[in-house]
Length: 402
Image (cartoon, rainbow, N blue to C red; front, side, top):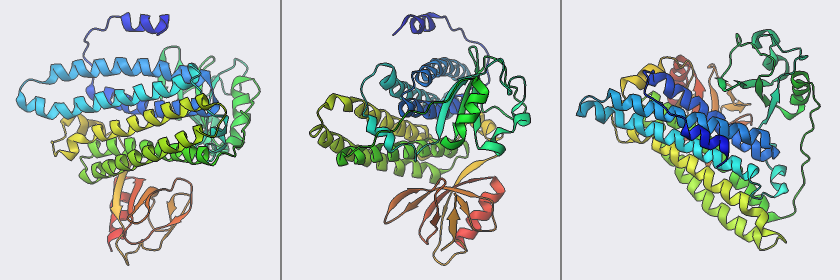
Protein backbone atom coordinates (compact mmCIF):
# COMPACT_ATOMS: atom_id res chain seq x y z
CA UNK A 1 0.00 0.00 0.00
CA UNK A 2 1.51 3.34 -1.05
CA UNK A 3 1.38 6.67 0.84
CA UNK A 4 -1.67 8.01 -1.01
CA UNK A 5 -3.63 4.83 -0.25
CA UNK A 6 -2.74 5.06 3.47
CA UNK A 7 -3.80 8.71 3.53
CA UNK A 8 -7.10 7.76 1.89
CA UNK A 9 -7.75 5.12 4.55
CA UNK A 10 -6.83 7.50 7.38
CA UNK A 11 -9.30 10.17 6.24
CA UNK A 12 -12.17 10.26 8.75
CA UNK A 13 -15.64 9.47 7.40
CA UNK A 14 -18.64 10.67 9.37
CA UNK A 15 -22.30 9.81 8.89
CA UNK A 16 -24.22 12.24 6.75
CA UNK A 17 -27.76 11.85 5.40
CA UNK A 18 -27.52 10.46 1.87
CA UNK A 19 -29.97 8.80 -0.48
CA UNK A 20 -29.39 5.04 -0.34
CA UNK A 21 -31.04 4.85 -3.75
CA UNK A 22 -28.49 7.25 -5.24
CA UNK A 23 -25.58 5.44 -3.56
CA UNK A 24 -26.77 2.07 -4.89
CA UNK A 25 -27.07 3.45 -8.42
CA UNK A 26 -23.57 4.97 -8.22
CA UNK A 27 -22.13 1.74 -6.82
CA UNK A 28 -23.68 -0.26 -9.66
CA UNK A 29 -22.37 2.13 -12.32
CA UNK A 30 -18.94 2.21 -10.69
CA UNK A 31 -18.74 -1.59 -10.51
CA UNK A 32 -19.56 -1.95 -14.21
CA UNK A 33 -16.94 0.66 -15.15
CA UNK A 34 -14.36 -1.04 -12.91
CA UNK A 35 -14.78 -4.34 -14.76
CA UNK A 36 -14.30 -2.60 -18.12
CA UNK A 37 -11.26 -0.62 -16.96
CA UNK A 38 -9.47 -3.49 -15.25
CA UNK A 39 -9.62 -5.86 -18.23
CA UNK A 40 -8.68 -3.06 -20.61
CA UNK A 41 -5.66 -2.25 -18.42
CA UNK A 42 -4.53 -5.86 -18.84
CA UNK A 43 -5.30 -5.91 -22.56
CA UNK A 44 -3.28 -2.77 -23.27
CA UNK A 45 -0.75 -3.30 -20.46
CA UNK A 46 -1.70 0.24 -19.44
CA UNK A 47 -0.49 1.45 -16.08
CA UNK A 48 -2.55 4.63 -16.52
CA UNK A 49 -5.81 2.66 -16.85
CA UNK A 50 -4.77 0.41 -13.94
CA UNK A 51 -4.18 3.50 -11.78
CA UNK A 52 -7.70 4.75 -12.60
CA UNK A 53 -9.04 1.38 -11.41
CA UNK A 54 -7.41 1.87 -8.01
CA UNK A 55 -8.81 5.42 -7.78
CA UNK A 56 -12.29 4.09 -8.49
CA UNK A 57 -11.77 1.25 -6.02
CA UNK A 58 -11.07 3.83 -3.30
CA UNK A 59 -14.23 5.66 -4.34
CA UNK A 60 -16.18 2.42 -4.04
CA UNK A 61 -14.88 1.85 -0.51
CA UNK A 62 -16.23 5.27 0.45
CA UNK A 63 -19.60 4.54 -1.16
CA UNK A 64 -19.80 1.22 0.67
CA UNK A 65 -19.24 2.86 4.06
CA UNK A 66 -21.85 5.54 3.37
CA UNK A 67 -24.37 2.94 2.26
CA UNK A 68 -23.72 0.79 5.34
CA UNK A 69 -24.18 3.77 7.68
CA UNK A 70 -27.44 4.78 6.01
CA UNK A 71 -28.80 1.22 6.08
CA UNK A 72 -27.96 0.82 9.76
CA UNK A 73 -29.74 4.10 10.54
CA UNK A 74 -32.79 2.94 8.57
CA UNK A 75 -33.33 -0.33 10.47
CA UNK A 76 -35.88 0.47 13.19
CA UNK A 77 -37.40 -2.97 13.81
CA UNK A 78 -37.00 -6.67 12.86
CA UNK A 79 -39.15 -6.21 9.76
CA UNK A 80 -36.86 -3.43 8.51
CA UNK A 81 -33.79 -5.56 9.24
CA UNK A 82 -35.24 -8.46 7.23
CA UNK A 83 -35.85 -6.28 4.19
CA UNK A 84 -32.60 -4.35 4.48
CA UNK A 85 -30.35 -7.41 4.88
CA UNK A 86 -30.39 -8.25 1.13
CA UNK A 87 -29.65 -4.59 0.32
CA UNK A 88 -26.65 -4.76 2.66
CA UNK A 89 -25.64 -7.93 0.81
CA UNK A 90 -25.80 -6.04 -2.50
CA UNK A 91 -23.54 -3.33 -1.08
CA UNK A 92 -20.99 -5.88 0.17
CA UNK A 93 -21.03 -7.90 -3.06
CA UNK A 94 -20.60 -4.77 -5.16
CA UNK A 95 -17.51 -3.89 -3.13
CA UNK A 96 -16.22 -7.43 -3.76
CA UNK A 97 -16.48 -6.76 -7.49
CA UNK A 98 -14.47 -3.59 -6.92
CA UNK A 99 -11.80 -5.52 -4.99
CA UNK A 100 -11.56 -8.14 -7.76
CA UNK A 101 -11.15 -5.40 -10.37
CA UNK A 102 -8.40 -3.88 -8.24
CA UNK A 103 -6.60 -7.24 -8.12
CA UNK A 104 -6.80 -7.45 -11.92
CA UNK A 105 -5.30 -3.96 -12.23
CA UNK A 106 -2.43 -4.94 -9.95
CA UNK A 107 -1.38 -7.59 -12.49
CA UNK A 108 -0.22 -4.60 -14.54
CA UNK A 109 0.92 -2.26 -11.76
CA UNK A 110 2.94 -4.90 -9.93
CA UNK A 111 4.14 -6.56 -13.14
CA UNK A 112 3.03 -9.96 -11.90
CA UNK A 113 3.56 -11.47 -15.34
CA UNK A 114 1.27 -12.07 -18.28
CA UNK A 115 2.07 -13.71 -21.62
CA UNK A 116 2.15 -11.31 -24.56
CA UNK A 117 0.23 -13.93 -26.56
CA UNK A 118 -2.88 -13.15 -24.51
CA UNK A 119 -3.54 -10.03 -26.55
CA UNK A 120 -3.82 -12.05 -29.78
CA UNK A 121 -7.15 -13.46 -28.57
CA UNK A 122 -8.63 -10.45 -26.80
CA UNK A 123 -9.04 -7.72 -29.45
CA UNK A 124 -11.94 -9.56 -31.09
CA UNK A 125 -13.62 -10.07 -27.73
CA UNK A 126 -13.64 -6.54 -26.36
CA UNK A 127 -13.76 -3.00 -27.70
CA UNK A 128 -10.74 -0.78 -27.22
CA UNK A 129 -10.85 1.39 -24.09
CA UNK A 130 -8.42 4.29 -23.77
CA UNK A 131 -7.65 6.97 -21.19
CA UNK A 132 -6.81 10.46 -22.40
CA UNK A 133 -6.26 13.93 -20.90
CA UNK A 134 -8.21 16.68 -22.69
CA UNK A 135 -5.72 19.07 -24.27
CA UNK A 136 -6.19 22.85 -24.11
CA UNK A 137 -6.04 22.96 -27.92
CA UNK A 138 -8.51 20.10 -28.41
CA UNK A 139 -11.49 20.82 -30.65
CA UNK A 140 -13.63 18.95 -28.10
CA UNK A 141 -12.76 21.18 -25.12
CA UNK A 142 -15.62 23.40 -23.94
CA UNK A 143 -18.22 21.55 -26.02
CA UNK A 144 -20.99 19.17 -24.96
CA UNK A 145 -21.08 15.53 -26.00
CA UNK A 146 -24.27 16.32 -27.89
CA UNK A 147 -22.50 18.99 -29.94
CA UNK A 148 -19.56 16.72 -30.70
CA UNK A 149 -21.86 13.74 -31.47
CA UNK A 150 -18.96 11.30 -31.39
CA UNK A 151 -20.96 8.10 -31.13
CA UNK A 152 -23.06 8.58 -34.26
CA UNK A 153 -20.09 9.80 -36.32
CA UNK A 154 -17.36 7.42 -35.17
CA UNK A 155 -18.89 4.77 -32.90
CA UNK A 156 -16.66 6.01 -30.06
CA UNK A 157 -18.30 6.68 -26.68
CA UNK A 158 -17.11 8.76 -23.75
CA UNK A 159 -18.06 6.33 -20.99
CA UNK A 160 -16.77 8.39 -18.05
CA UNK A 161 -14.96 11.60 -17.15
CA UNK A 162 -12.78 12.31 -14.12
CA UNK A 163 -12.48 15.97 -13.14
CA UNK A 164 -9.97 16.10 -10.30
CA UNK A 165 -11.42 13.74 -7.69
CA UNK A 166 -14.95 13.96 -9.12
CA UNK A 167 -16.20 11.15 -11.37
CA UNK A 168 -18.88 11.71 -14.01
CA UNK A 169 -20.26 8.27 -14.77
CA UNK A 170 -22.48 7.72 -17.81
CA UNK A 171 -22.06 11.29 -19.14
CA UNK A 172 -24.98 12.46 -21.29
CA UNK A 173 -25.44 14.71 -24.28
CA UNK A 174 -25.51 17.80 -22.05
CA UNK A 175 -22.19 16.95 -20.37
CA UNK A 176 -19.42 19.42 -21.28
CA UNK A 177 -15.85 18.23 -21.86
CA UNK A 178 -13.41 20.53 -20.08
CA UNK A 179 -9.67 21.08 -20.39
CA UNK A 180 -7.62 18.62 -18.27
CA UNK A 181 -10.57 16.22 -17.89
CA UNK A 182 -9.54 12.57 -17.78
CA UNK A 183 -11.73 10.99 -20.47
CA UNK A 184 -12.35 7.27 -20.89
CA UNK A 185 -13.10 6.38 -24.51
CA UNK A 186 -14.48 3.08 -25.76
CA UNK A 187 -15.14 1.90 -29.28
CA UNK A 188 -13.78 0.14 -32.38
CA UNK A 189 -9.99 -0.05 -32.72
CA UNK A 190 -10.28 1.24 -36.28
CA UNK A 191 -11.90 4.52 -35.18
CA UNK A 192 -10.50 5.28 -31.76
CA UNK A 193 -7.05 6.52 -32.85
CA UNK A 194 -8.18 9.76 -34.59
CA UNK A 195 -10.60 10.58 -31.75
CA UNK A 196 -7.87 10.05 -29.14
CA UNK A 197 -5.47 12.28 -31.09
CA UNK A 198 -8.10 15.02 -31.45
CA UNK A 199 -8.89 14.83 -27.74
CA UNK A 200 -5.35 14.74 -26.35
CA UNK A 201 -3.16 16.30 -29.03
CA UNK A 202 -0.86 13.24 -28.89
CA UNK A 203 -0.35 10.33 -31.27
CA UNK A 204 -2.16 7.05 -30.70
CA UNK A 205 0.20 4.08 -30.71
CA UNK A 206 -1.61 0.74 -30.33
CA UNK A 207 0.21 -2.05 -28.53
CA UNK A 208 1.45 -4.61 -31.09
CA UNK A 209 -0.04 -8.10 -30.94
CA UNK A 210 2.28 -11.11 -30.79
CA UNK A 211 0.84 -14.41 -32.10
CA UNK A 212 1.27 -17.62 -30.12
CA UNK A 213 1.86 -21.19 -31.17
CA UNK A 214 1.07 -22.65 -27.73
CA UNK A 215 -2.22 -24.52 -28.11
CA UNK A 216 -2.82 -24.90 -24.36
CA UNK A 217 -2.24 -21.19 -23.83
CA UNK A 218 -4.67 -20.32 -26.62
CA UNK A 219 -7.33 -22.48 -24.96
CA UNK A 220 -6.62 -20.85 -21.59
CA UNK A 221 -6.98 -17.36 -23.08
CA UNK A 222 -10.21 -18.33 -24.84
CA UNK A 223 -11.52 -19.62 -21.51
CA UNK A 224 -10.65 -16.42 -19.64
CA UNK A 225 -12.35 -14.32 -22.33
CA UNK A 226 -15.50 -16.43 -21.98
CA UNK A 227 -15.30 -16.21 -18.17
CA UNK A 228 -15.00 -12.43 -18.38
CA UNK A 229 -17.99 -12.09 -20.69
CA UNK A 230 -20.16 -14.46 -18.64
CA UNK A 231 -19.20 -12.71 -15.38
CA UNK A 232 -20.10 -9.31 -16.84
CA UNK A 233 -23.44 -10.70 -17.98
CA UNK A 234 -23.95 -12.20 -14.53
CA UNK A 235 -23.43 -8.80 -12.88
CA UNK A 236 -25.93 -7.17 -15.26
CA UNK A 237 -28.51 -9.90 -14.64
CA UNK A 238 -27.94 -9.82 -10.88
CA UNK A 239 -28.68 -6.12 -10.58
CA UNK A 240 -31.69 -6.48 -12.86
CA UNK A 241 -33.04 -9.42 -10.87
CA UNK A 242 -32.96 -7.28 -7.71
CA UNK A 243 -34.25 -4.08 -9.28
CA UNK A 244 -37.20 -5.87 -10.85
CA UNK A 245 -37.59 -8.60 -8.20
CA UNK A 246 -37.30 -11.21 -10.96
CA UNK A 247 -36.65 -14.75 -9.75
CA UNK A 248 -36.12 -16.06 -13.29
CA UNK A 249 -33.28 -13.61 -13.90
CA UNK A 250 -31.77 -14.54 -10.52
CA UNK A 251 -31.88 -18.21 -11.54
CA UNK A 252 -29.94 -17.37 -14.70
CA UNK A 253 -27.28 -15.68 -12.53
CA UNK A 254 -26.93 -19.00 -10.71
CA UNK A 255 -26.64 -20.86 -14.03
CA UNK A 256 -23.94 -18.45 -15.18
CA UNK A 257 -21.99 -18.87 -11.95
CA UNK A 258 -21.95 -22.65 -12.43
CA UNK A 259 -20.68 -22.22 -16.00
CA UNK A 260 -17.92 -19.84 -14.87
CA UNK A 261 -16.84 -22.34 -12.17
CA UNK A 262 -16.61 -25.06 -14.82
CA UNK A 263 -14.62 -22.80 -17.12
CA UNK A 264 -12.21 -21.87 -14.33
CA UNK A 265 -11.49 -25.54 -13.65
CA UNK A 266 -10.63 -26.16 -17.31
CA UNK A 267 -8.74 -22.88 -17.47
CA UNK A 268 -6.46 -23.85 -14.59
CA UNK A 269 -5.69 -27.20 -16.24
CA UNK A 270 -4.76 -25.51 -19.53
CA UNK A 271 -2.52 -22.95 -17.80
CA UNK A 272 -0.67 -25.75 -16.00
CA UNK A 273 -0.26 -27.65 -19.26
CA UNK A 274 1.03 -24.49 -20.95
CA UNK A 275 3.50 -23.98 -18.08
CA UNK A 276 5.06 -27.37 -18.86
CA UNK A 277 5.92 -26.30 -22.40
CA UNK A 278 7.19 -22.75 -21.85
CA UNK A 279 10.71 -21.65 -21.02
CA UNK A 280 9.44 -19.11 -18.48
CA UNK A 281 6.35 -20.43 -16.62
CA UNK A 282 6.49 -17.47 -14.22
CA UNK A 283 5.03 -15.38 -17.09
CA UNK A 284 1.76 -17.24 -16.56
CA UNK A 285 1.23 -16.04 -12.95
CA UNK A 286 -0.90 -13.17 -14.18
CA UNK A 287 -3.28 -15.56 -15.91
CA UNK A 288 -3.88 -17.40 -12.63
CA UNK A 289 -4.60 -14.08 -10.88
CA UNK A 290 -6.91 -13.08 -13.72
CA UNK A 291 -8.85 -16.35 -13.53
CA UNK A 292 -9.27 -16.14 -9.75
CA UNK A 293 -10.45 -12.52 -9.86
CA UNK A 294 -12.88 -13.22 -12.68
CA UNK A 295 -14.42 -16.08 -10.72
CA UNK A 296 -14.76 -13.74 -7.72
CA UNK A 297 -16.81 -11.35 -9.85
CA UNK A 298 -19.12 -14.20 -10.82
CA UNK A 299 -19.52 -15.22 -7.16
CA UNK A 300 -20.31 -11.61 -6.20
CA UNK A 301 -23.02 -11.46 -8.88
CA UNK A 302 -24.66 -14.50 -7.29
CA UNK A 303 -24.46 -12.83 -3.86
CA UNK A 304 -26.23 -9.75 -5.27
CA UNK A 305 -29.19 -11.87 -6.40
CA UNK A 306 -29.33 -14.02 -3.24
CA UNK A 307 -32.22 -12.09 -1.68
CA UNK A 308 -34.35 -12.67 -4.79
CA UNK A 309 -33.47 -16.37 -4.85
CA UNK A 310 -34.53 -16.62 -1.20
CA UNK A 311 -37.83 -14.86 -1.99
CA UNK A 312 -37.20 -11.92 0.35
CA UNK A 313 -39.32 -8.88 -0.51
CA UNK A 314 -37.47 -6.10 -2.27
CA UNK A 315 -37.01 -3.05 -0.04
CA UNK A 316 -38.74 0.16 -1.24
CA UNK A 317 -35.35 1.89 -1.62
CA UNK A 318 -34.50 -0.55 -4.41
CA UNK A 319 -37.88 -0.03 -6.03
CA UNK A 320 -37.14 3.71 -6.09
CA UNK A 321 -33.91 3.02 -7.95
CA UNK A 322 -35.83 1.06 -10.59
CA UNK A 323 -37.98 4.04 -11.46
CA UNK A 324 -34.93 5.76 -12.95
CA UNK A 325 -34.16 2.87 -15.28
CA UNK A 326 -35.62 3.27 -18.77
CA UNK A 327 -33.94 0.12 -20.12
CA UNK A 328 -34.30 -3.32 -18.58
CA UNK A 329 -32.92 -6.82 -19.01
CA UNK A 330 -35.45 -9.57 -19.48
CA UNK A 331 -35.57 -13.35 -19.85
CA UNK A 332 -37.81 -15.19 -22.30
CA UNK A 333 -38.08 -18.83 -23.34
CA UNK A 334 -38.64 -19.42 -27.06
CA UNK A 335 -41.41 -21.96 -27.55
CA UNK A 336 -41.12 -24.42 -30.45
CA UNK A 337 -43.18 -23.15 -33.37
CA UNK A 338 -43.51 -19.66 -31.90
CA UNK A 339 -43.06 -16.46 -33.91
CA UNK A 340 -39.42 -16.28 -32.80
CA UNK A 341 -38.51 -19.91 -33.55
CA UNK A 342 -36.09 -19.75 -36.50
CA UNK A 343 -35.83 -15.94 -36.41
CA UNK A 344 -32.46 -14.49 -37.37
CA UNK A 345 -30.40 -12.19 -35.13
CA UNK A 346 -28.09 -9.75 -36.89
CA UNK A 347 -25.71 -7.68 -34.82
CA UNK A 348 -27.72 -8.52 -31.71
CA UNK A 349 -30.99 -7.25 -33.25
CA UNK A 350 -33.86 -9.69 -33.78
CA UNK A 351 -35.47 -9.80 -37.22
CA UNK A 352 -38.93 -9.30 -35.75
CA UNK A 353 -41.44 -6.52 -35.26
CA UNK A 354 -40.04 -5.55 -31.85
CA UNK A 355 -37.10 -3.32 -30.86
CA UNK A 356 -35.41 -5.72 -28.46
CA UNK A 357 -31.67 -6.46 -28.48
CA UNK A 358 -30.55 -10.00 -27.67
CA UNK A 359 -27.34 -10.11 -25.62
CA UNK A 360 -27.17 -13.82 -24.71
CA UNK A 361 -28.80 -17.18 -25.35
CA UNK A 362 -28.71 -20.27 -23.13
CA UNK A 363 -29.23 -23.36 -25.24
CA UNK A 364 -30.02 -26.66 -23.45
CA UNK A 365 -27.57 -28.71 -25.54
CA UNK A 366 -24.87 -26.07 -26.12
CA UNK A 367 -24.70 -23.85 -23.03
CA UNK A 368 -24.29 -20.07 -23.23
CA UNK A 369 -23.96 -18.16 -26.49
CA UNK A 370 -23.02 -14.50 -26.07
CA UNK A 371 -24.55 -12.75 -29.07
CA UNK A 372 -23.29 -9.17 -28.79
CA UNK A 373 -22.53 -8.07 -32.33
CA UNK A 374 -22.53 -11.62 -33.72
CA UNK A 375 -25.18 -13.23 -35.91
CA UNK A 376 -27.30 -16.14 -34.72
CA UNK A 377 -30.72 -17.74 -35.10
CA UNK A 378 -33.25 -18.35 -32.35
CA UNK A 379 -34.48 -21.90 -31.80
CA UNK A 380 -37.31 -23.46 -29.85
CA UNK A 381 -36.11 -24.13 -26.28
CA UNK A 382 -33.67 -21.19 -26.22
CA UNK A 383 -33.56 -19.10 -23.06
CA UNK A 384 -33.01 -15.56 -24.34
CA UNK A 385 -31.61 -12.61 -22.38
CA UNK A 386 -32.69 -9.38 -24.03
CA UNK A 387 -32.41 -5.66 -23.43
CA UNK A 388 -35.10 -3.08 -24.14
CA UNK A 389 -37.93 -1.06 -22.63
CA UNK A 390 -40.67 -2.56 -20.49
CA UNK A 391 -43.20 -2.44 -23.32
CA UNK A 392 -40.86 -4.08 -25.85
CA UNK A 393 -40.00 -6.75 -23.29
CA UNK A 394 -43.68 -7.64 -22.99
CA UNK A 395 -44.02 -7.77 -26.80
CA UNK A 396 -40.92 -9.94 -27.07
CA UNK A 397 -42.20 -12.38 -24.45
CA UNK A 398 -45.53 -12.65 -26.32
CA UNK A 399 -43.71 -13.45 -29.59
CA UNK A 400 -41.60 -16.08 -27.81
CA UNK A 401 -44.68 -17.84 -26.43
CA UNK A 402 -47.06 -17.74 -29.42
